[in-house]
Every structure is written in structure tokens, then in C-alpha cells.
Length: 135
Image (cartoon, rainbow, N blue to C red; front, side, top):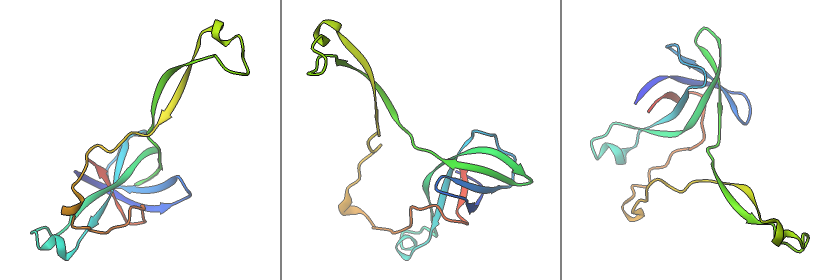
């Protein structure tokens, strides 16, 4: 993980302004991190941990150290065949099938044993001052 800068403004429901110390590429995907410090973690010997909050995509370099970025939704698009057979189309059985696209969200990449959780709380919402970097 490499921290490159921070979120300095949230403009609306999808766009934010970043302050990045080094030049980055337009269309680059960055991760927003939260640094979490809690006594439960210190008991394990960890001063803090960096938790990824979400990914954003760089849209345009503004000036100096500032960049405009935006959040996005990842989607999985599947192509499926659907019979044209329906009450509205009595000839559908003779016409065959049509191809449709179904957009679905993917499942979790892993599962956890909840009984062993430390239940560390942090906000998942991106806030001004959150760090931005590359995984």
C-alpha cells in the first residue's frame, strides 16, 4: 500500500477533489483508506491499521496538486437467452430466442467467522481528510 495524498473536498454525490503529491494518470483507479486506531488493536501490537473504504477513478488534473475524481459502481454483465414465447407474442415460439443482458452485483470475495470478530467500528463513508493511495 502506498499513500499518495488525501481527499480535500466532496463536491456532490459522486465527485470529489484530491490533493496528490506526485503526478498520477487520468483514469487511474485509487483506493480511499481510513486509518483506524483503537485500544483493541493496540492490544494486538498494532498502532493502527489502514482499511480500504472504496475505489475512485481520477477524471482530470485541475492545477497544481489537485485532481477531480469520481466514485463508480462495479457491475457484472451476463448475456442470457430469453425465449420470445409470451402471451403478448403468440408467434414467439416460432421466432426463437432473444439475447438479453442482466447486470448483477458480485458476491463477497471471502467469508469471515463473525464469532471471532473484534467488531472494530469505523465509518465507511469517505470524508475530507481521508488518505488516498494505491493498494
